[in-house]
Image 1 (cartoon, rainbow, N blue to C red):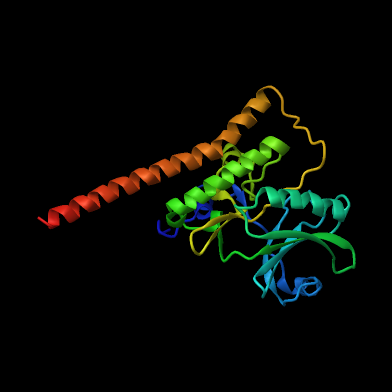
Image 2: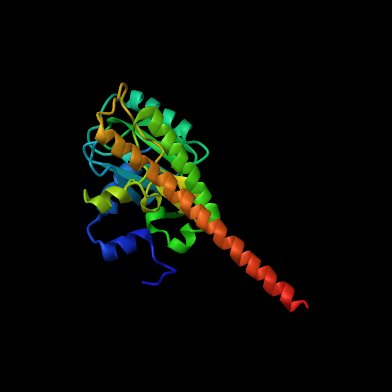
Length: 262
């Protein structure tokens, strides 16, 4: 594995296989009817991804479809919880909260392949890769790190207000390593890094029911509090290391240039 092309997922798969549960692939042909069903003035292209591992939001998980107008549509499959209009409204609250760190996003209600109303999320397509599949050399760019920091702090604020959190997106094992990785932003597939090195929170539709109350108390609450400090500690440490590295390499460069001029 070349260090230049090593990704967070490829590293953990090599040294701790089974820690990250990779998403199942979908037969693209099975989505053609669904893709052509949406009221969009553009053409369906292909399946861009899947989501909702544990099917808490919809009985069949979810699918992400790509269109030729630079848009992706995130569609729940099977039965969904709650009224679609209510759910779309709650999604828009999260979308507005994460504006600035996410691509342009809109929640609508549209009919699925069976004519049933579903909350659909339309989002500007990001040309790039999920953070978990992005080479470490690219993730360590200072601009990328600073974007990820903004996402981490915004997600932490959302958690403080709503007691829900989904920075990682990937499903990990319940081992100690798996529990830690779910709080490390480099292992996120909710964060996308585009071809210009900008990081975006693509999954900005954290949906929460009203009156959600965390059941964690005592030692459990303390552990959860400590784990929620981990993403900020991780990203701030890497930013500090990157700035120090850039400072010393800049100093070495200026020293070399100065010595060559005299």
